[in-house]
Image (cartoon, rainbow, N blue to C red; front, top):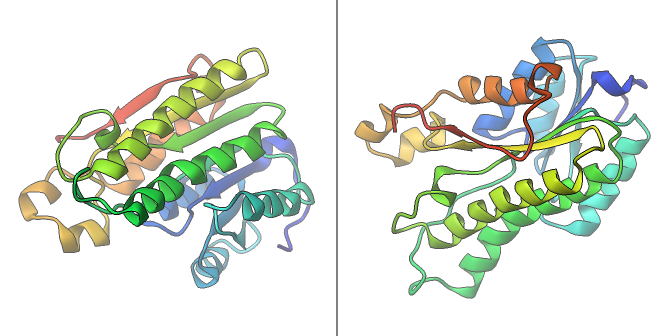
Length: 233
């Protein structure tokens, strides 16, 4: 990945770095002076982030739904350093009711939203010495609404994963929290959602700021929390 060795306190890993929220997360960590490893499936996307922050952001690619690919990714990260801050923002949406869902709907949503967080948390927890992990869940995982069954179950799993891992790591110096957005003001959501919902959407930068706070010494007392970032929703 070409980045120089850095200290533990300097290194942040952002997983799902090229999505509408992921780019904002990279922005806020790079702006505060961290060295960032930006990970996504798309090489072109992470290359754009490297170009935006030369010498600050290093890009890597991986299928974050695959345990083997995640393990390979973290072996490459090992050659750079031990991260202090890890953000798992990988995810995506596919609608549908329980009765209408296909096996592919169910597997795809669980792998993309919960599996990616699980394998990334597993790899990070084995390596980190201090700092914080932040997962991105969704209001759908907290408030049951029709039309997003498999997605909602997967995002609820992300919250429970966060709680369980926080309990396992208590006393280790590693905190684990989740941020729980409702509607994020992304280009994809603007194309697919009605205007009345977009008016309630939260800008990605505001959610990224919450994540950056959780990944700071100022949030040392917070672990095992699911922080709502609903805006006006």
